[in-house]
Amino acid sequence: MENPFFIELLEAGMVVCFGAAWPISIHKSITSKTSKGKSFVFLLVIFAGYILGVSRKVITDTYSIAFYAYCLNLLMVGADSMLWLINHHRHDKKAQL
Image (cartoon, rainbow, N blue to C red; front, side, top):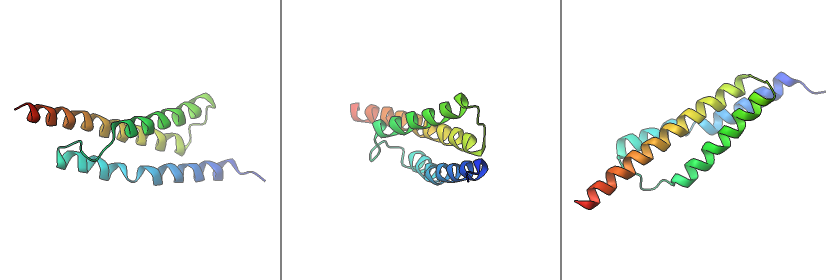
């Protein structure tokens, strides 16, 4: 008694819930202009997880709503990672002055 649509909907819901925090994290990175309090390794692990999720969807040819949720989260984690690098570099420059 398996309903593929319902299963995909549950997965999409999970990914959307996980992704709900990323806009807040990105906003914090932009406004605080610091990398303190964030782990770049953590961001990379999450990024790798979303890469694996997207890869699974591509390999199994299941381009559902969950696929697009994975892609959106991947973009947000990538953006937050880039902001971390920018802020970390900015902090290093200030420390050298």
